[in-house]
Amino acid sequence: MSEDAKWKTSVTRDIAHMHTSLQQVLQTLSLPGLPNPHIHTVEPTVIFDHDPENEHEDLEEEEEEEQSYDNSPKLSPLAENVAQIPIESLYQITGLRSLRSTESVTDEQRRICKQLRDSDFISRGQISVQDAERLAGYYITRLDPYFYNMTAQYEGLDDFRRRSPTLTAAVLTVAALHDVSAKPDLYSLCSKEFKRLVANAMFERKIDVEYLRALVVGSFWLSDVGWTLSGYAIRRAGEFHLRACYYQLTDSLKHPSKYDKDQLCDARDGLRLLYLLYICDHHLSILYGRASIMRDNEHYILGYENYLACSVASDSDKRVAAQVSLLLLMSQIRESLGPEDDTGSPLPESMLPRIKSFERDLENWVLRWSKTHNPNKHIGTFPVKGTYIHHYFSRIYLDAYVFRGLRTNSTSQSSVIPQPFVETASAAVTAAVSIVNIILEDVEVQVGLAGVPHYFYGMIAFACVFLVKAAAKHSAQLFINQQETRMLIERLSTQLSATQVGRGHVIHRMAGGLRKMAESLASGVTQQVPTKAALPESSSQSMDYSPGRPAVPMPLEFMNFNQFPSMDGTNVGLADSNLGFGMPFFDFEGTNIDMSSPVFSFPI
Image (cartoon, rainbow, N blue to C red; front, side, top):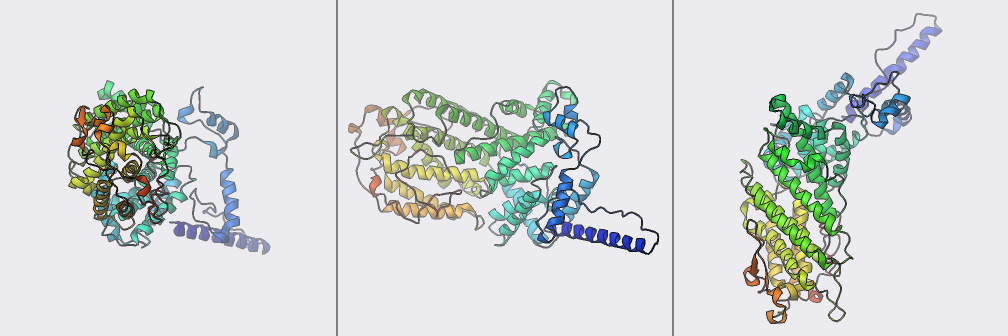
């Protein structure tokens, strides 16, 4: 697209120069002049790759474009009253087009968009139509169902290409990353094109909703650019006033005959897109231990039940609402217990009732939503099993808070969990083990690993590293066996290695990193078994936190924790320079697992 547009720009400029020169010749010869040219030397607002040869002319054109004025500034529909948007007041006074808060798409912009679509990287021959069709089909049937069927209205490659070159590049990039049968160079080729298209439109005054969808697709699956794309997408989403879709759906509940089905479907799709931005934003916030951008107290977030109650709500909308409700709860956990990066402040024992209250809330969540989802024709009962997995993710996220800021014993050089927190700490270990076990034991979950967004991999890695640290530092209190832990991690590594994904997928690096971690654990087995008699009576039982069951006391032997010998953290052998779980996003060869670091840390 850039090459095509550059060529047209160059030809237009050359013709203009020829016209000017010939006009001067005719004036010198005292001959009649030429008519005014019908072409313009300034191209519409499309940003292209840098061309050093034309840098001076480009800068002049950009300055002229940026300083363009409207002779008769008009108010946008949103500002036709006294309480208008402040930027509209400045626009009225100055007439600067760049200050318009809203801007309609002109026929000229539509023409340029069509030219860009007609010259996408498939038309240029960078990727064959056959490869592109296979990747588009793979995305639609194998990946989009895990993404709440966001592109359900697309049936194949032609639909993507007609609507948006950026969305086309996004879905092909994600498919090439996951498709084990894709040619080795397809992922890098598609990824480069996707990033180029996103960058070229970065400063566009107007984008379309398909471009926004492309940003969301990249945010969910592409771990190297997810954080950046998510923040950018949230800002650009504000231009579409998607929250108005919520009020339209809510109004339809009061006045069912006011809207037809097409209007409701459009409103539902717009609100679903807004919810996906919220989900992605909060997933990344959890992974990186950073504050989220989108607020939890918005009407459309708190009112997700109205979204479910609309007449056009589908099974995908139930899954979206389940995520929104869970992330609302996890935000409350974070607000109550403190940010994840505050690892130095011990959690006061007075917070234990609050933790128990959150545990009950999470139990109620999984009880409700595990009974709500129906099987999907592409992914079977994964929506139900995904509910349990997200429950385990949230439990380890919550219960791991009790490890925050634990003081080191001067005698044993190890930290001790305060006795009131031992039960909650055991529940965190239980959740971590459950995450690993459900992957090892359920075939549909194993297949699903090849299609889920990268938030899953972050929480799985968090569970594994948490288990290692807990075993090294707190085996005497939590009855964790180093050998059992090592075997569990080895089995998970083997399972991840067998997952059918492209060679550039993070799962391969996860499998290698877990294998090295297991090998390091193998050299540190000890047999220091604490007796129950040496422990306070309250530590000889824990809670059964199995989803769908009430939280009742359960003896530790039924949780297999009483079989676990101690693991001496000083003999774990995790100083292997090849063992790492670093940044960015699980660089499994970048850094070491620091056993002196706190057990409590955020997943990334």
